[in-house]
Image 1 (cartoon, rainbow, N blue to C red):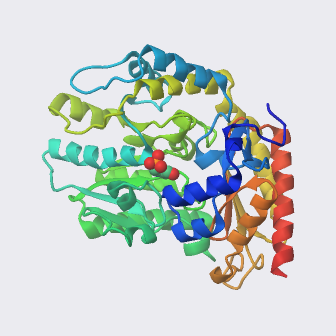
Image 2 (image 1 turned 180 degrees about the vertical axis):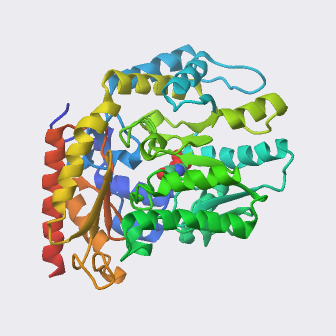
Length: 467
Ligand code: PLP
């Protein structure tokens, strides 16, 4: 592991100011206010190793977000790099259209069937999670056409969910500010509220609230008409929405409702997949039995782009036995280099026992540390699941309504805290006043301690600034 505090990568070929000027002049970043970026200048990340990043000024940062929830095996894993280089020399690209295939894509499809929950023997590859969810929309509707029910085309999702940025992905998502740009959602997608106790369940017993939140799905099915509802999609633990861990009663009740009305259940595991929750897939942690699983990110630990949909028996059987041609696919479906990297990545996760490491060791260790954080004056609530964690910054620990007293959103306390994090060598994300983490699965107990030290420091600095 590189422990130096300076960098001598290609970043040093230009000064930070030069990188920032060229960046602002030409690069339209995702989810970015371009004028603000031009004013402040981008943070230039120059290199990484293990859990750490270095910016172009040589500052070291603890990456508690695994890049963008994806670098599950940490940075600098040579076996993934070697797999990519070998495959690029052997066969850098060939497509999977028109009855052709490539060895890495076949081997990865086989291996995914091994690590997936029982009943998932097939996979459709995409290049990203968004494309995976676009595939879900087309596949779900195709399934119901094949059942002779083409009118069954409505997909129910949740407000505040994030399912990607393509037209279908952003429509499935429940981010209203995304819908406001570009005329979304597309037809046939509707939303229910999320199982977030602080927002919707204050004063209620949490288990009762879980059942209540699940009952909103049944209400929506009845409102739309059970013969029109094709599927329900949700992340086991809502990630980008702020690491919303639902009460334990939620998913079993959602499963019961899906079963009762015969609607397909889609588990978006772009974040929760590949060990993040302490099982290979998040549905195994929350106890749901999905028909389709969207994946991306952790399948390659983000080293190269790859996504897809694991297709359970019910849908696969219909597509294969009744289907004829499925008129859908991407140039990079089953990209050989991406598949070779995914194979190396999954092999590493297995060899290093990372899923068990999260489940039995660092996951519970982090949970105990987050529990203890509740004593901090700025913390109103904490939640963890495996290596996902959220802490709610609150004005007071209790309120008349039940639960913590929240800050005025206009104060943007989360953003204040996030700035202290960056200034003090920690990458942590703010979703409103929820500070969230999802560190690489290779994190050790000593590194959890290091992380908690940084978190304490940044919380204290935030308190001091608010005074
Ligand atoms: N689904 C979930 C749950 C995600 O968190 C994301 C991305 O963060 C996506 C889908 C979209 O994936 P991508 O950015 O690879 O298109």
